[in-house]
Image (cartoon, rainbow, N blue to C red; front, side):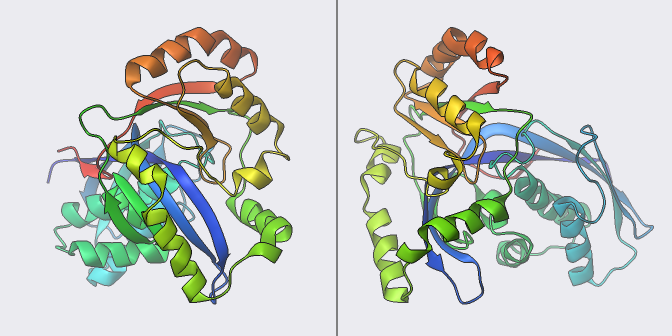
Length: 311
C-alpha cells in the first residue's frame, strides 16, 4: 500500500468554563471548541514487523511510547488482534508544542484515523471515538472538529454551525520559550476557585443549557455581535505568566478585533476578526511589536472539519 497522509488541525477554545469536580477526579467542563487551519501532517507507511516508529521534524518532541501518536497506534493494534501490524510514521509539526491548541491530541486522533485506514481495520466512527476518549479528553473533538459544544471532560460533543459564508479569522500568538502545564493550570484553578465549584448534576446541566442558549452561539452563527470570551483557566494563568499578560495586552491593541482570549490552558493567545483580511492587516501592523516581545504569530481561518485523510 502507498504512503498515507493525514491532516491534523489545531483548535482554539471560544469558551472554557470549569463547572466543578467529577467523581473520577477530572474537572467537569462546558466548552466551545473550534478547529482552525493551522495543522500538522502525518505520513504513514505500513510494515509487518509489529513496530510503530515515529519520526518528527522537532527534536524537542518525544517520539517514544509517551507520544499520543504511538499510544493511539498501540491501542488500535491491540483492539484489532493483529500483533504483526506496524507502521513508520513521520510527523511534520506546524502547531506549537505545549500551547493549549491540542496539537498532541490532534496528532493522536490523526493516528487513529490514518492507521485504521492504512491497516484496513474497518473500525466505525463510534469505536474510534471511544478509543479517542480513553486516550485524551480533547481527542474526540479532534476527530470531528469544526465547531462543537464540549461537555464532560470534553469528550461529549454537540455540533454547531458557524457562518460559513464569511467565517471569522484569528491572529494567534505564542511565545516559543513558554509552555503551561495543563495539570498545573487545573490544579491552580481548583486552589483559587474550588470554593465556587458546583457539585450536583442538576447544576452542571443548568450551566450546559445556559451555554446552549448563550449569545456566543449567535455570534458563531453570524447573526449577532461577539460577546467577551470566557476562559476560566485564563483567569488563573494570566496573573502568573508574564508572557500571557504581555500577549493579551498586545492583542487588545489591534484594531477591529472582535474578542481576545487565551486558548485552553495556554499559553497561546488569539484575537478574533470578522475575516482573514482584517486579521492579516492587524498582523502586519503589529508584527514588529510581536517580534520585539519574542512572540511567534500566525493568521488562521476557522475550519469546519477535524482530522482528514489527504490521500
